[in-house]
Amino acid sequence: MTWVLDNLGLITDLTVEHLRQSALPIVLGFLVSIPVGWAAFRYTAVRGPVLALVGLLYTIPSLGLFGLLAAALGISFLSETNLVVALTIYAVAIMTRSVADALDSVDRTVRDAATAMGYSPWRRFWTVELPLAGPVLLAGLRVTAVSTIALATVGILIGVENLGYLFTNGSQRRIVAEVLAGVVAVVLVAVVIDLLLVWVGRLVMPWLPRHSRRRAAARAARQAVAA
Amino acid sequence: MCLRPGPVGAPPGHPLCEHRTLLCLGGGHVRQERDPGYVVIEFRSVTKRFPDGTVAVDSFDLVIPARRTTVLVGSSGCGKTTLLRMINRLVDPTAGVIEIDGTSVLDRDPVQLRRSIGYVLQNGGLLPHLTVLDNVATVPVLTGVRRREARLRALELLDVVGLDRSLAERYPSQLSGGQQQRVGVARGLAADPNILLMDEPFGAVDPIVRKELQKETIRLQRELDKTVVFVTHDVDEAFLLGDQVVILEKGAHIAQVGSPSEIIENPASEFVASIIGVERGARALHRKQTPTGTVLVDSAGRTQGVLVDEDRP
Image (tube, rainbow over all chains, first blue to last red; front, side, top):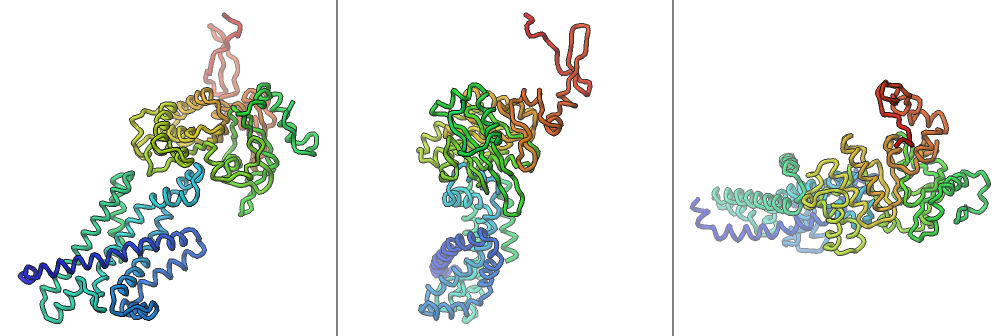
């Protein structure tokens, strides 16, 4: 505890860094997975292969991915860009299936009704299907966010400082409190971001009755445990 | 008598000509043909074959008169909903022509076409993430009316369909089935379309609400003067609402077209007679003398009404 109090400044700085480094991949991953997930939803013939392939990305070991990305993109192995791109790829790997499932969860008759009213396909997607896919999208986004925040700590292995620094530094200097502080900080950040997402979800989906929100939350929790 | 000529070369006795005769003999329709606001829907040899090989509609011909309610009635799978969905291009025909006011629907942009035609679905088909008011305002907003204006008009429409304005900010899941259905009707009317398509709109509400909604539909039709095409599997509903009733068999083959009275008085076939139940059930009435006069009794022995003399004071 003394170590934590003595190093509050360091922990705070690393937390801010950590948030910054995770936020970008979460947002980018979400944005990229929408068209990919849509394609998997829309073209049923390629759905299985696309989702399997994208899902496989998650199994690439992070250190290997850093090396591949550095070579493929011509960026420095030891760079924040490398970390952000890698985390984005992992986020896409998790989120794409959620997007496909979420679009699939929209009631066919509602989609049909929107078409009958005279929505163009483009407008129908953005103003009807995507909002109604919201609960399942949110569940997927929460898993993605938590996973990205936990995963970001590997950044320290390629010299990108965030809360992962407390793991390596604590291990090398044999300060258990430092490692523990790192774990607790990461969990706290993940929980806070998760709660934030739930709150934002309530704000942007006011039509959902309370119980279905709880159901979506339970589903997200189950997925998180499974992941 | 018909002002618009049929297709060139249509042989005499062509089913189209028969329908035309029927239409033209209908009196009022002829006068309306000169009215520029007049909208007629016409099916000519329309066939729809789905990719899996089923022929839902097989060479269908029909003229749907303007400002009247035409009811397509038949059992499920007879192609009646497919017919309805071809009018606003939710389904395109494999062959044949569907014209609205002389223009083939296939020549019109489907999105624009749908915005110009009201559509009411079973369960209202409301968008669950929009409030009642925004649901009603959907089509005007799509066509570019400012949201504020569209909402004001939507409020008035709630009055028209008999909904309390206090429901305006609710979401569809917070309404009863009957209320949702009324919102669906209000939405169908919002862009003030000439044509209103209703696809088994009252199929999912309980019988009492159903009766109420049917009465409202008759009232609205009288007040608003739309061309209504109504699909149902309920013969009683068809006879109650329809000016013209089209009884369909499988493949959308027409068993009989006519006014409810024409069909009940003179069913064209055994099939029609059995589907409308003239030989048994509620429509097969016989006289029974009672001390106070003559009453009419159905085949189950239930008294359905009293026979009165028309020119009695």
